[in-house]
Image 1 (tube, helix red, strand yellow):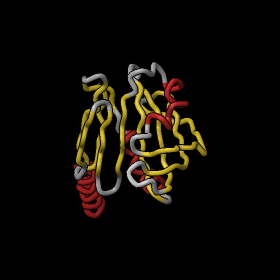
Image 2: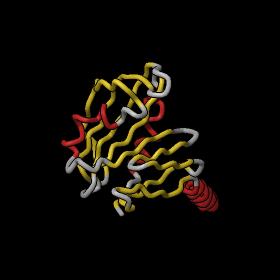
Image 3: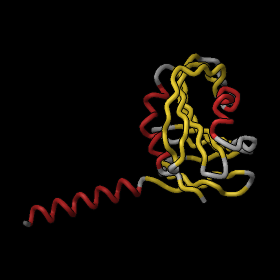
Length: 163
């Protein structure tokens, strides 16, 4: 019995330490907070206009509010144009239906090039809605960099809450 209590206590401590490693941030839509994400504690956040950059040790995520889109379907065909400031020539190789915030979303993976140095790479883009606004989120990089960041990327998106 003593060991089970010790195990439960240790597990609780480890679990709380894992949750303590994240911090909430707000993503704006039209200048007003619209979305909350839980990101790694070490993340640095940079916002410029409708784009937010989340830079952490294990993941680098770009999130755009897409003001002209009324639904996910409006933004999906424009994914390459939405992310072109960071990743150019995005050609979708696979599209999957996923859920973000309980709403249908589209995850697209494909090839292209990094905008800063034109190195070939891969990107993972998720177009989603909070019910009022449409967003695009992206991880990218050379080689299989986007695939390596995929678990942390999806963890951040799974933490999304509408504000």
